[in-house]
Length: 354
Image 1 (cartoon, rainbow, N blue to C red):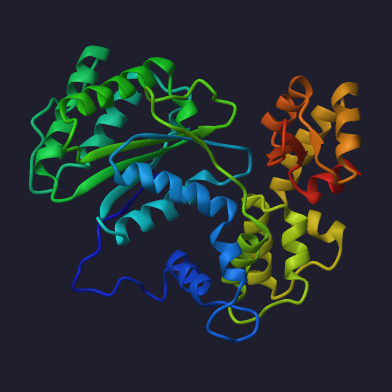
Image 2: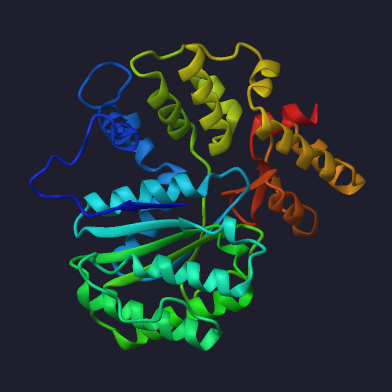
């Protein structure tokens, strides 16, 4: 699956009514609780968790620096990258972004993967140009040479700066990731001051080995409570359910849950009225979360730790027991003085624990 966010045409308006992400940004800039032109809550909204991550990633990409994004389970990293691509395309200076996901390449033979990536790189070349490379490759040396050639052609021929935003990179074989990152490293070394191409690799938080040289590694955050409300309000339009904030709190800001609740409102015009109803509308996502909880709770040490965290208080991190729980998507690290603290990622997880 490949989507493109090209730089905007300066003769056209930046936003369109049909674009949900743009509409959400316009809504965020104008929404307030009392109808005035400014709400103090806007300051807190600007310091939102996921928004901070987005700003940090945009900072590096606008400097044409590569970035690695690691996402916890149910974080919807592809949606994050699509929003990021839009922000980069409409900002200044504009960057044309191409988003691609690699899940479909899992288990494929190496020649298939090589040629798929070459096809992705070819799309960086303007349509009027013909890339001067072989149409297919059969070994690693040919693959790396083709990518290096395509990057140089994109650097010299593209009318604007470009970025490849690649999601689910953990599904690529290690040899392909090595060739990919070495190729980009060679490009950066060849153009130390005037880079026009950059790369973002996004993968599961479990893929701690994912890296691009010394590039920064950023963990994708869940929505803050305000962000979760905003995401659900984007589906409700002018209607604002009275209990939307309590429901946002129940989701913990986990993007997968927030999106499912918002979709339910868009379809039915109402939000669930009880905890059990909220869990029921999650569908396959709920089944996946229950499976993760059941597997972890089967271990007595993990089960005891979860029981303590169900009280709702943040506890000092015990890395040996907490790290597997965090990798399973059940915990998050929270700011605290002294040693790091952890808490359950969402009240919804406590509800699944019973």
